[in-house]
Structure formats: C-alpha cells, structure tokens
Image 1: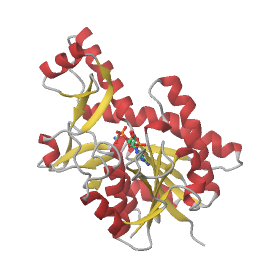
Image 2: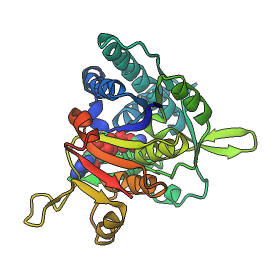
Image 3: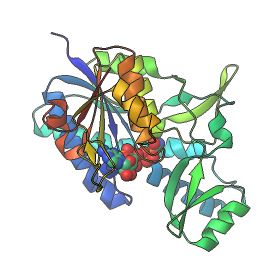
Image 4: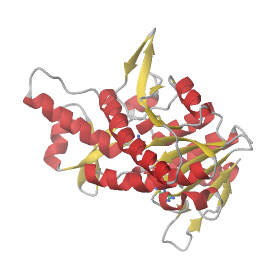
Length: 310
Ligand SMILES: Nc1ncnc2c1ncn2[C@@H]1O[C@H](COP(=O)(O)OP(=O)(O)O)[C@@H](O)[C@H]1O
Ligand SMILES: NC(=O)OP(=O)(O)O
C-alpha cells in the first residue's frame, strides 16, 4: 500500500532563538518526524523563521554599517539564509534520529522560492512580526530607515509584509524526492517570496506566513494530512474565561462561524486556522491537525490535538 503524505509545519517552539537553543530544540522536532516516518508517512516539512530571519537581518545590517562596500541585505536574502541555517540543523537532527531508529533515508533541504503577487495588499499593510524585542531608541532608528515597527507591551519589534503564497517554483523537486521515499524540508520560513519578471525571479521584501506555505505545499503534493506542530496541545478560544472552548474535532464550516464572531487573532491562530480550512475544503478526504510538538504521534492518531475536517 502506498504511504500517506503528510506536510508538517513546525512552529517557533521547535527552534528557540539562539544557536544552542535551536540545536537542542530541533531534537524534539526530529523525534516527532521520526514517529511519523515510522508510522509510514512520506513527510514534507516546513517551518517558522521569524526570530532567525530577524537575527540574520540585524547581523547583516550591522555588517553593512561596519563595511561601506556592502549595502543592507535584502529581506529575501535573509530569508534564504534562514532556510539554509534552519534546514542544516533540522536535516542533521532528523538524519540522526532516523539512523538511531535503524531507518536509512536521505533528508534534504530545498531552498524554495515562492511566487507572490506584487499587488498583494499585504505590501501596504505589514502584519508579520519578526526578530527580537527592541528598545524605543532602536525602534526609532528602524523607523528612520523606513522600516515598520510595532509596539508590544512597551517593547518594540520589526513588522513586515506577509503576502500570500501563489505558487512554489521548486515543487517538482519536492515531488521527486518525496516519490523517492526521502524526507524533504521545503518552503522553510514560508519560502523566499519572489516576484516573477519574465524569466527572472526577483526577491520581495516580505516574509510569507509559513502556515499558508504549508497549506500550499500540501495542496501541490496532494497530501493527506496537514499537521501544525505548535506549543499548544489543542486549539482554544476564550482561554481562561468561563466561555473557554477547547476543540477536539471541528469542521471548516464551524470554524467559519467562530472566525465571523471575531475569534482567532490575526497574529496568532488565524493563519493556522485559515490555512487548515483552505486545505480541507478542497477535498473532504483530507484532514488538518493542530497539536503540540511533543504529541505529534498522538495528535495524528486523534488521541490529542484538534482535528479539522471539511
Ligand atoms: N492551539 C493554540 N491555541 C492558542 N494559541 C496558539 C495555539 N497555537 C499557536 N498559538 C499562538 O500562535 C502563535 C503562533 O504559533 P506557532 O505557529 O507555533 O509559532 P510561530 O507561528 O510563532 O512560529 C504562538 O505564538 C501562539 O501564541
Ligand atoms: N515565516 C513564518 O511564518 O515565521 P514564524 O512562524 O516564525 O512567524
């Protein structure tokens, strides 16, 4: 019997923020992926990159300040670096985890370019928070450079456009590796946003929401399952209030009602919920699952997590 295909979206908690944190945290992600491979799934992974791309951008900006021959690195280039850096740690950790289980499979990271629309309204309405917290002085300096900044409880962070993914240029490479039974990391950090200009692809100053790229990947490889691994075990609304609701299984139709009622904030759960709805409504045999990184296997089996159906 053919293996089922699963696209896994790893959230920020799978990485942490510093080099040592990432090396330690990816081991948990690798364990989750190992469980899915053992459960006979073909696995395609995408992941978060907000903290890392912010770190890389800060480092590159500082470098340009120190050496006048260099200009500030474009955000698309910082995104590419984050794909390479995170992919390196992740593919190594997954390789080790699989070998420790006696499984021999190549794990590869594909530097993935994702088509975005130059007229996407996201370019005039930035929503994606990236990088570390800044002081007021640092935030003012960013704004003076023409960058957008958002305040969060008296602290400041960079905020950048997050257009929707339209297409994935390396999708045939992803399919070829998956069909060969290999583990693929693709569309990391939502992929590198590019604008198609004739035969050229021009990097865009944006960060794509990885949850949407995960759904696009899942659609293009015709996956059976889209699995979001986060820091939370189940999708919850009105947490900590008498009206708290924890979802075990929920349909796209029901979720639409909760969205209409204003649940699922744009900066946290909305992209996951919206991406899950888009994926499952295209084919009733599909399911999306939101669960914690630690309980990926149980989430897939329906023992925990939130399962979203058409
Ligand atoms: N099940 C959930 N319930 C409530 N909030 C959640 C849930 N899953 C994620 N979030 C919120 O959404 C944000 C994004 O989650 P995640 O995708 O795991 O990380 P990120 O997008 O930061 O890489 C988190 O910071 C968290 O606050
Ligand atoms: N690219 C992206 O969605 O990153 P985060 O999940 O870290 O915000």
